[in-house]
Amino acid sequence: MNIIVCMKQVPDTATRIKVRPETGDIDPEGIQYVVNPYDEFAVEEALQIKERLGSGEVTVISLGTHRVKEALRSCLAMGADRGIHLNDSAFEGGDSLATAMALAAAIQRRPFDLILCGRQAVDDDQAQVGASLAELLDIPHVSLISKLELSADGKQATVRRDVEGASEFVEVDLPAVLTCQKGLNEPRYPSLKGIMAAKKKPVEELRATDLQLDANTIGAAGSKMKVLRYSAPPARGGGKILQGEPAEAVRELVRLLREEAKII
Image (cartoon, rainbow, N blue to C red):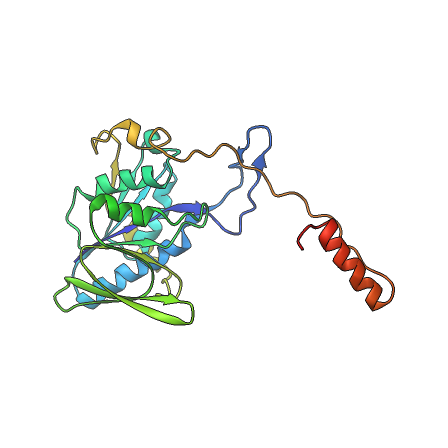
């Protein structure tokens, strides 16, 4: 079975993000980048499927600048077989649809039976690339899966989605795009042997011209959504301690919530 995992490199959630007020963009100084945590569940699930079947290939694909190779090597160290790096300035600044356009063009170049993605990226939290990718490839899509079982012939999958107070089971024909969330598995740590082996595994680098993509359909030029600027949240004001009898304090609290905080 040929499994493709779409991976995004994102800022570490422990990194303190700073906004440059003069330009309204993110200050890249000091930001540490990691594999998107939800994408790690997708990589792990692909590896477990391959191990259960005893055959197959896991390919990890990612879009971004030169530093993305580090994240790809991390996935290869976990056990993925090969990487694909979409590295071209024409891809930069793209929204979810423009990103999916580039990924779809690259994925169509090779046979695949299953595409796994994380449920969302922790930097923009849009959760749209997986669904857009399925639409562009004209294949089924199921989001937020917490369990995955394949049929004996590998032509169908049964997935579980956790909904409020219950579980939903969906049967889907393959190939399909499935987006993974926490609870599906526990991602493994790369072993020393895996880290050393990752250095020799192939990473194919593709540019927009390799994919024969119109520059107006990808990157900032092909985006339907534009980010104008970022801004830091306003600083929190100091708290207030209400004095007096409980009944008086409650009346004052209600007044402050209504007139100052304006939340009731």
